[in-house]
Length: 141
Image (cartoon, rainbow, N blue to C red; front, side, top):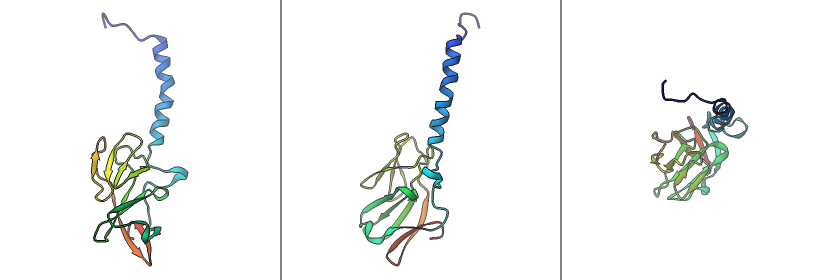
């Protein structure tokens, strides 16, 4: 194009050097936890004792990528704690607000709804129940 300089060799090499870094960042947000942990339970999983989640609060089970909340009525709700924006495992819970460290998306742990973008899709709800004093969540729990 007239009046537009062509890319220098240095610019092209710099771009090529950054490509592996971008690929590594995408792999870090692939939706699989450390050690190949699935993005969410693929079968019912025992999370902990029933008393770990008080009424009006939530607990993040990082190793299983699940967050469980308990309503004032005592009813339990569970959601996958994998961010719906880029698939990163969410590792921060303050009160009942989940925050994804990858891009800052926030979710309500009691409803799964998005509180702050860039995520636009709510967290996936999971079945959850109290079995003999233990919280069990996952598909078909």
